[in-house]
Length: 328
Ligand code: CP
Ligand code: NVA
Image (cartoon, rainbow, N blue to C red; front, side, top):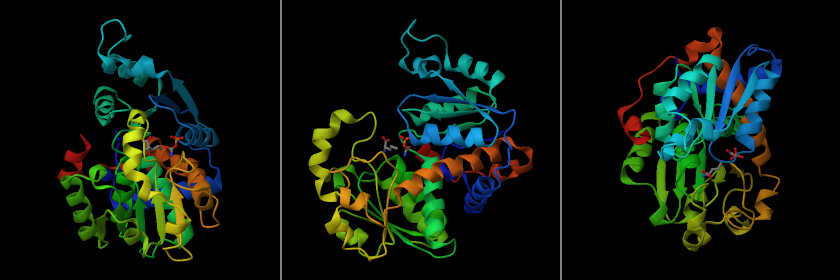
């Protein structure tokens, strides 16, 4: 049995196979998930991940089964009689009916436990550290714009968090170069900086971390940002926003890149905060194509996990030690 918790579990060749399979399933409309039931459990809100994936599963002939987050995940609160049953028991039950589970959780460790306790594949729909399904959709979007061969410069301006982490793991493994700009106090720790540098050396790209957004975007083919304040840290808004103001992707910053540079955002966007209307609605903004591709890559991932014909795409490859230590 296999899972998808982080991009670091995948080899570059598997990433490409997943993207190719996703595009193929989107164009053929083959109903490869008939009779498959996928449980959705979301501890946090979601539009794109939940609806995009549900539509993907429906289009492949499968069923998405919504599970109330409190039924499965309330035990994280560890207060007797406020949770119905242990995560172990809940996962063992869900494993009797569902073929896979798609989970959005606060803590990555919850996914690790779900994987350990259940007998079905677990797919990460976003956690505090990773957003692998987003990163796959982003790489598909990038390839649709530039083709598969060209090595690119990807600038990420903003918060060092889940979306950026999975994007960097994907882009660096595909041989692209990444430039990150964000405030020092919210930047990557040394382990993660080392990890990105190692990936860049291993796969022939480059990695640069700066506090200067103009430097990061100067040679960029793509400028990416995410919200400055992620789900669950809304109470830090006032504090964070003071440091992030210089990192807004606005016309001035966008015009410091090349005229053909694209803009990407995982969404939801906070217009006027991390990005302005001018950039969101710019002809080079690819944000809705990214959103569309959230559905497309879900097709490839669940098919690779659940259909015997494609399961070899997910053969365990042995995760690099450093990536493993960063994920727990
Ligand atoms: N990008 C993304 O994951 O969006 P949702 O939070 O709406 O799922
Ligand atoms: N970093 C954001 C991504 C939302 C898709 C969050 O975790 O809320």
